[in-house]
Image (cartoon, rainbow, N blue to C red; front, side, top):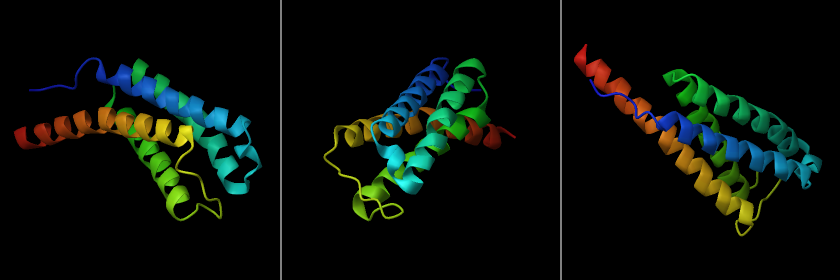
Length: 127
């Protein structure tokens, strides 16, 4: 039976950590003054760090999927803020952090979600 690659939790955890650090840095750079968005950054950053260490320490599919979901919601928030405005805050797509966030969060989602979903569907077919 195929299993999730051994390095998948480490890479996913590092990408989650990068996302959390970026959002904490953005909060310090001034996003804390944006009413709802600043508070969401205060939630996202520590949650990403906790899930990052959880992914690295405990190779459990629920933790991997939780990290993937956090990254998907985070990236969705960026896309909404760029194209329509999130809670009244329009972000700029040309900002360097927007492109870095896009790369980190999409990569992290793919690294964490796809192997887990493939493994779960393989197990379901075998039972």
